[in-house]
Length: 399
Image (cartoon, rainbow, N blue to C red; front, side, top):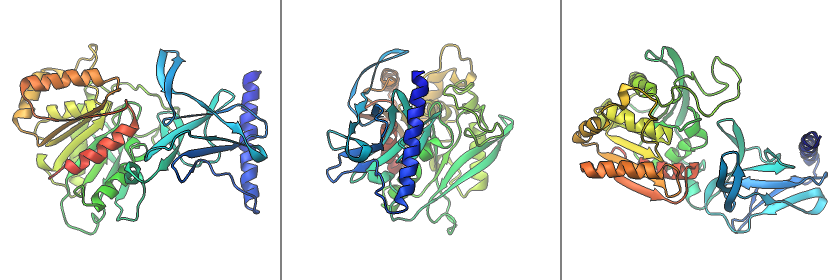
């Protein structure tokens, strides 16, 4: 009964917000949420005539221990809204927020939902969260600024290895269509639960590349964002499977199949775009599972990529996985590093659950005398870090 009432309260709040929005058409005051204040504190507002319990959860709130089905974890602590004037409840952050792209949700009587006054949402696996941006620093790379813009295409390619057509996201820099130049290519891979849209939406890749290139910090390049889930044709809702609820852990994501099929992607790009068709003109990087794929693809094909980026990368497959891709790793790394890649870049946060695995991998590289660049940041396994890593990695490419 309590759960039914909670759903009813949410429905009333949403309806109230819609009515309030309609009233705004005739001159009534609209609700602004979130509002970035002059001192970079942020205020959130909800029309709450039913006086439901409303809380905020977001990646900018203080972290504390919370109980979950998997035990105690460190997670943002929910913040309570307080009643204000005219039935509008508010919460304002205690401290100014640094420049960043943030995500959040509301919790209304224990049920997580979106902010009815904020139309900006992103999907991460099967969850939708609201987003907002605090400018004046790092997040200015994530904004659409008044600069020359590249083109984003959703293309379908045939994978003979996987025996299916698959969708891919491709960014071409400003000026590509009007020039005869050949461009280097960065292959940018997502993490587990993501797809060919993840780097575009959550990672703000298009805005980052437009801004870096416009500022002369990165060379104009093509960025290819494939779908690393080999069982999928495309992102949820964009394939012949229609509309279905996305799941986090899909079959065959880290069993060697992605690595074996990756040359199909490179061949498609080189056949359909004006690319630098050599190792010197190719880079590969990825986050988490995408870092795992980047590590193993680059060693599997040592003449394919001169630049490798591992962002919070998973390192080794589970013991249950049997694939020739993961055999003779030491020997394959030896061949790869004997060919002197121009950049082998590893980055991870101090609180990342993959920190230990990355430290052990770096010990292996150090023992063998292989040259690499290491970046250690604050924070954990989060998009905030991966966006920063991209802004730092891309300017190092194709020099």
